[in-house]
Image (cartoon, rainbow, N blue to C red; front, top):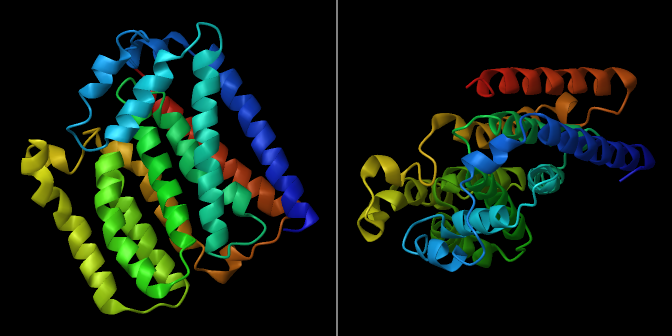
Length: 277
């Protein structure tokens, strides 16, 4: 990482944290408390036990635990900012694994900015954001496996782990694995096909275990189409970086200004679209 990129990364992180905290503290802060249905610490164990027989139990349990720790002044804003910051860091790590150059800190903001705007909706909850965040960190761990046979074995094992822990964000894990395998030049078509088929059919096979309908089992924990958009945007960013000019774009006033402008437009569109009602 050169000096320019390090400086950009620090400024992006600092400005993002500042703006995010200010936004969620002063933009209808009660919305965070009302829609998350906070529970007291005393009743938390009973609530958490209800998640253990369902997919996405870790994402749901973690979301419920964190929201039970909200403090009245600033707690919600700080919490959502830290969660989004964790998503940005994971996205940045992944982009670097795909050998994206100096502009990676800004590119990594695209799914996070959409997540920010989408959270303004009454229908979008913290467990959905955590589902994606946990998926990204599990994938980060997958990329650290260097042994080929172990990597392929863990690819299948992690399908079950991911669905159990985070539910429907399994789809983005499968996409990330396939894109990563192509990126590092491992063209194992049989492995790719089997991984894709298993990822598609796994929820169907597990629906009886979790006592969920076919429709719900593919969307749990959040049966709302826009909840999948941030993950899709991340996949689109990775596809876009396959173009050399995008991947190796240098930091300049023009490139930073254009990318920042696109991010602001995305944020404004998402907020205006989801904050109503």
